[in-house]
Image (tube, rainbow, N blue to C red; front, side, top):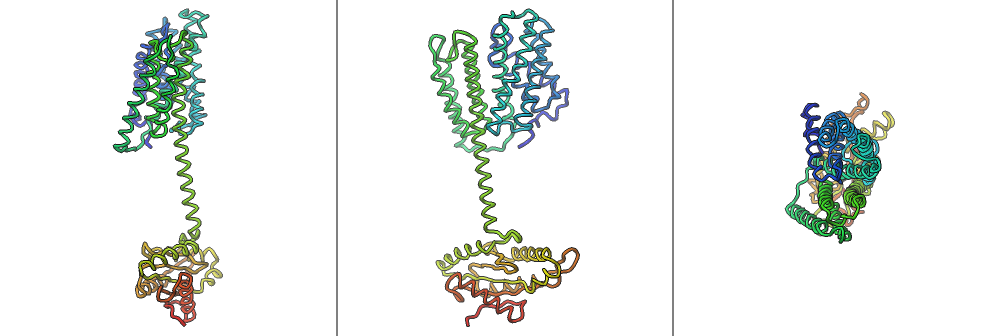
Length: 478
């Protein structure tokens, strides 16, 4: 995942602030096309979402650009410069408050919507910070005489609704699209995405272009929800937020035109229904997407834990070699395979000579150093089809499938010579000459089952020690 604001880091501070002012101004002028009388607010105010996303991506230091864009656009609407400055200040404080709430209670860095609880907290933060601009904006207009005080509550509700909806819809859209994921879609996935987009737009148009104040198509809105669920389960949060935004803007357009299930007799009721719908659609999509991602992460963590447990159950913690249990399971599998293929199966049993002297003279930590070095040497001496195991204490066992007796003897002798050449030290003190004894057994020549094969190699090892140690002995039947 790359820096979410990386595309703008190269711009100097003034360039970032100026760009934000221009984007805010253009978005606000475009949004005012759907303004609700007396013309100061809209059902959805996208600039509020743009402002919050900008502060989260670029930092609070770009607030002057936000304030400049908000003040300039309100100069084209408000009746006086004082009201325009006050409204611009309210819009800026709203974004600053929202950024503080998101960083404190949701997440202090992207991704912001990777958990269900983060989505719930974000919606609450949007509803809370939207009160700032609504209160300051409507109060300033009332003080200027542009609005009558009896209409204060209704206009405050409209303003709050627009800003809250803008934050809930636009901010996740921008933040999720700024997160760059290296996702390569297969042709089948592209075809599915195209089918989803067509189904969503067609359903949204059918739902919201039918219905008037005298005929409600409200029950048809439930057709949207399965499509949002489809997006949440099959696509990323980018596609989910895009789908939610597309549906919401279609809903707003037709509602303002007096069509669709939310076209009611009173404006306040229409706005209330529209806010409930937009919040539900976007929040549901984000929460489902977050839940899917949480489940995916939980399954990945579980698989990692299971792999770790399997490794712990089959690996010696000191040397990293297979433990005795895993050796036995491997031997049983290879025994069945060797009998089916009528091939040989060899076991080398190895024991370090006079290992107790190292522990007694230098301590057990020095002994551990020796065991680790021997384990590393064994790993370098075996094939990918072989297995090396710590059989117990200073005793090791190797299982070699598909090997001739001569090849196994050469392998054991090579390991013996390599151990003999080791010059190990512990805390600057030489540990002396390290030697090992080896016992070799081969099936089917020396054993008729896995247990007897291990016993034969162990007996050969015992014979090597009895013959003077530091040698390789092949099992011979008594």
